[in-house]
Image (cartoon, rainbow, N blue to C red; front, side, top):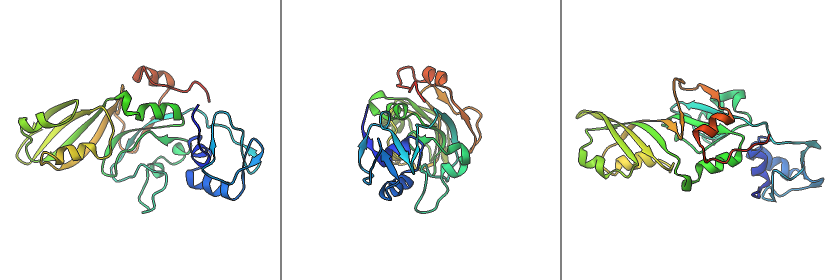
Length: 233
């Protein structure tokens, strides 16, 4: 079991946000195994430590994973210093105990998983597991066959093209920041619309922007057969 910083552990367990955890720890409100800890960076094993906040035992949040259709124009963070709307503002109470598995940038929409299962989140974001991600992309201008062949993607399908814009489906095996945009910029085409429609064996389906649904452990195991999914909490 991995050791993590105490403030991060409290956030990952769905107990407090990272900022709230840091403030509570520095104020002497958090104890580990009965002893007050004032260093937010103190390393703990969340599954083994007895953590209390203000004297109240804080257990791991119940297991939950949700599939969310992130709208364009919202950021994938719990709080934004620029006061932009976040995915948690959209989710409301439904997002209280889950954290995002990776990120979608501000202008991107589509499938975003959020979970309380840190083990699963770490597995799916590890590039070594090469989890497939499929995007539908609109770019300015007509993409040529030669340009398509130069794209460093697992699979690219040109769905429709004109002098004005091209529509494509792109499959990648890792989720680097702004990867799709940079890929098309490198061949001279600006991405004007980008949506992730699938992740592993999960699909966005008919969910409208801002809508979400619960995902079961059985569904995750079918969608990600090799994934490490927590059996507890």
